[in-house]
Image (cartoon, rainbow, N blue to C red; front, top):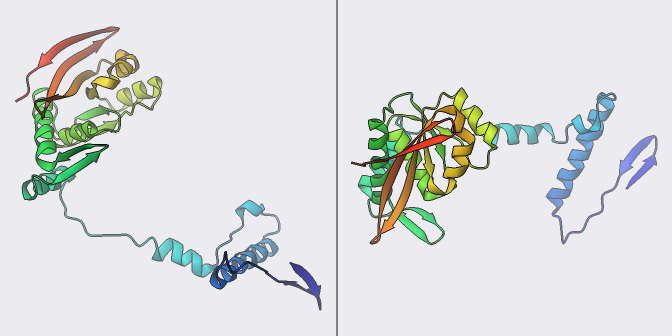
Length: 231
């Protein structure tokens, strides 16, 4: 509470020691002092624009705690993944609900997708759309695009149809990888763009996952389907 004494405004803070430590209480007083000093120095400024943090706290927050720079190898993500797959092929790489996949399995499917995309003409600086729910198959697609030399363009199912079509057209996406669960939505959203959509279905057969693909060339309202062999 505040009290006036000898032409001064004095503040006394009472707090529950069960809830707050003394250091926290002192920090709160420091914030209030900073706010009041800023209000006196800038009487025309909105209170929402006045600072609460002290100079020391700003330095700690912006410089010390934000000093997260680290040295990483100068190589691509998919190359680092391949190295890890060779080192620990049978280690678990992905856990999704009750599904566990090893580095070997994930790398094999990504290679299949990469070979398919390369046969379709994907290479360096080719923009490839990814339209997947957040599942392990999305990782297959992303790694496959990177291994093929392409650039991943995220077109998530949460986006509105108009937004997806805009992304596809502005990024000049000529190929897109789509999972079977999202296919109808993607066809509706991107049908007018002429993008070459590759439908990827991850089939579970005899305990072995395999990638099955179909090519869907979108023209107007017609999607022509043709199976694609995977090497």
